[in-house]
Length: 528
Image (cartoon, rainbow, N blue to C red; front, side, top):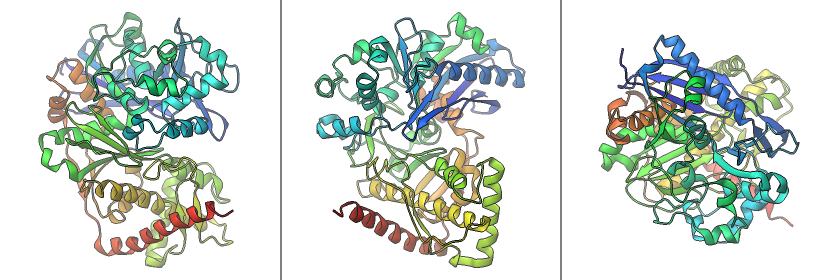
C-alpha cells in the first residue's frame, strides 16, 4: 500500500468525520463520532471545541485502525468545519460564550442567530465590504457575532486573545500555527482576499471592532487553501494517532470541501465553468460556483478570490435550514416523533407509494416557503419566516407524509430561486453536482432534477467532502505540485440524472406559486 496516504477531516453540525484516501482519491476507510450542541434559545447554539477536537482525534484513529495502516504511511491531513467561532484566551484556555458561565461552551455555532441586530447594523454602514457578501450582512457571519460578544459578554471579550473559525482552530490544535485560511477569512470575516491589504480597518472601526486584532489574534494576511501550515506537533500526532512527519494543509469552511472535490477538477475546462454549480446539502444547503470573472450579485455571498482554487472567483448561495427543516417538520407534526434515519426512510417510502396512488394531484394544493430560519439567499433576509398554505384537519401519518413531501418541494424551489438569480447575472447553470446527506433522500434527488430543470450529478465518491479535504492534504504534503493538480489527479466519476420534462412542467406551476407566496408574505409584513 502507498506510503503517501492522506486524511481528510470534516466537522459538521453534529459530528466529526475522518476519511483515509490513496493518492488517486480512493477512500480506504471512514469513521464518524458525534459532537454535542447546547441550545438555550431559538437563536442560541454553542459547541465545546475540546469535545470537537477529541471527536476528531477519535475519528482519525478509528479510520487508520480499520484500514490496518501504519501512522507513518499518512503524509498529509487537512480539516474543514462549519463556520463556527471558537474563543480562547492567551493561554489557549476556552472562553465561555453561552448564556451560562460554563466554560466548556466556547464556540458559537454557525446557525446561531443571536447577532441579528449587529448584522443589521453592519448592513446599515453601506461599506464596500458588503459588496462581497451579497449586500447584506448575515448573522451567521463572524463580525456580528464578535460584536455581540463584545457588547453582551464583556468579561469573555476581555479574556479573549485568540478567536478562530473552527477549521482554523483545528489547524491550530494540529500544528500550533496561528495561520488562518484565505477561505475562512474571506468568506466569513469580511477579509478582502483580492486586495493587497485585505482587512478594511475603517469598517472594523465603524462597527466597534477596532480591537479585533488584539482580541482575536488574526494575522495581517491569510494562507492559500492547501498551503502547508507545517507538521503535526508531538502532542497532536499522539492524539491523532499519526506522526510528526505528517503535513497539515490550510483548510476551508465545510461546504467548500465538497466544491473542491466537484468543481475543482473543472478548472481545466474553464469554458464550461459557468454552467456548473456544486450543491452541498445536509443540515443546511450551499450552492457554490467558480468563475474567472468577478460578479457581485445581491443576496449571493461573494465574489471571493482564491477561496477554492487560486486564480478563480467563488460565490455562494445558501439555505440556512434544509435537512434541519425536514427534521423539524417530523418533530412538529402530531404523527411525527424523533427524526431518525429510519423514520425519514419510512416517510419517503410512503410518499412514493401515495404518489403512485394519487398521481400528480398528491398534495398539490399544499405549498411551503422553507424560510423557517430566515432566507440566506437570494433575499438576504434573516428575519424571513416560513409559510405553509393548504392545511387541513388531518393529523395522521399520511398527513405528515404530505407535509414532508411539499416541504421537500419548497426546499428545492428555493434552490431554483437561487440558480435563477445566478443565471440572471452572468451564469448559465444547467448542471448541479450534489454532495452531502441529501443524496440519501430519494425525494430530494428526484426533485433537484425535475424542479430545477438541471442535470443532477452525484459523485461516485462515497464522501466527496472528505475527498475534497484529502485533495487539500495532498497539496500541503506535495503529493501533487498544487491543489489544482491534486483535484485533477484525485477526481472521481459520477452518475447523472436528467430532468423529466413532464414533471418539470408541473413544477413550473409550483414555482410560480412559490414566487407569488414570496410577494404575499412581503405584502403581509407591510400591513400597518
